[in-house]
Length: 303
Image (cartoon, rainbow, N blue to C red; front, side):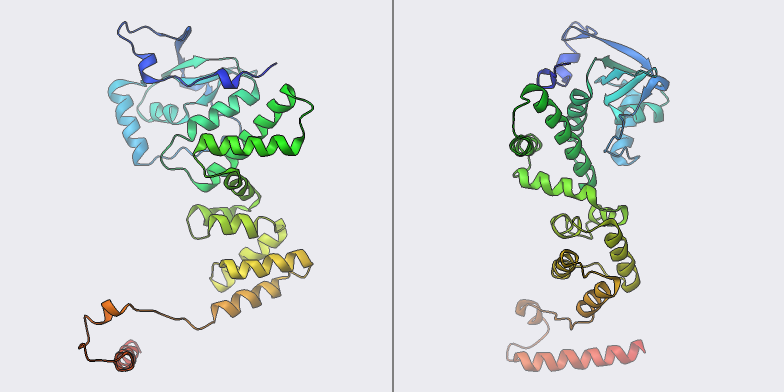
């Protein structure tokens, strides 16, 4: 079936609630469907969290119902697959509702994927892992559409254009950013969690860790847990090179992370901050001597 995703637009609030209170939107009928007949999108990459934002959604639904209908498509197994509206369904459940308004559309997999990704990217808070799998799914959908529309198009050229398109529509700086996000899908769960928690740099993980094999990543996590450290870019550059050379082992990882971890720490204090505690006539050496003396006293107290 020829794709028509580019012609499909999400329903806006004004389209749904006009002066006449009609239940039709662009020729489509809004239907109330039991929540038990609504199923999540296959491999849905976005989390549905019971957070503060969800609580506000629940309060709104309890007070006024679901104002903007979800978009769904029929399932071969029965019921409907949610394209856009996973949070609205969860909010309806928590609000004690039994049904939810939906627009039922006949969509192929590529059309459904693109709408699902684009509608969820409008959220305020999105984890790197969510973007990673969402961009990957949308890229595959656009690639399939491109093959159907122009079978002679070179695969590499089409993929490049698709990534630029995704970047533009998602508000990313360029297609390279999309490429980096997609690279995160190669990370094993413990490492991807560190990226989501902002303990591991998104770009560093994409550029240096994603190229490691699954076993190498597993070994890296083991070493990180053993030493209780998170590797920095300089360490990962060396780890990546060892992987390319075929010389990366657990021992090598331990040596690299241990060496950096045991290196001396340099603390820099701004003069404006130090002068709050010292006379203007004090030199840098005098201030250092006082600080060291105070630290020695603090060390004895701790002991």
